[in-house]
Image (cartoon, rainbow, N blue to C red; front, side, top):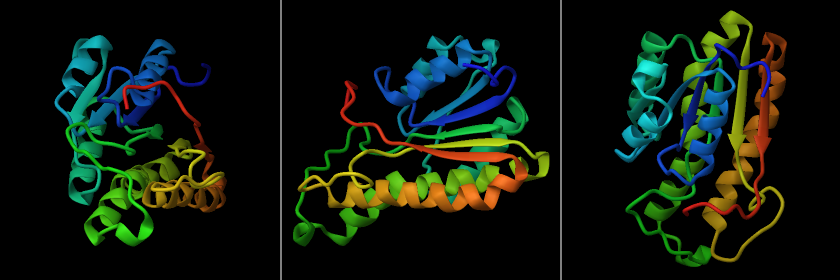
Length: 200
């Protein structure tokens, strides 16, 4: 992986040892990036140690990425510890450890279930990106990657209307932001995984 050495990379949703987020963090660290990871579970401390710990230039913190104040504190602490964020991988979403979210057809989706699904998948990506973008624009460098899904942008799955809507929204955000941020040497991309063998 070229071009990431000594860059500060933030990977969200990296709490699971068998997830896309942690796998991405491992690759970035191996390529020489200074890596910050976050999740909503205290397992994030275990992932930090597996990447070499704070002594190896890894930063880890619990954070509720649906809360703009918590996101701002997270970014400030990363900048204080590792430096300004150059790369952000918006991977948080899909499921949270310890919370069961069974599939539901649209007419059975409650207000709470709708807001929860949109918040963890789409609002989190918006808040994190918004927090790091001004610094990227000022420095004229940035890389933003949304981990979306084929569900929503490409295909539909019965019972996954909230998830599909949020993931399609990530693609829409990426397309518009790429036009807005491109003149500042910031690239914005959206990855759409299909079925991946992860713990979830």
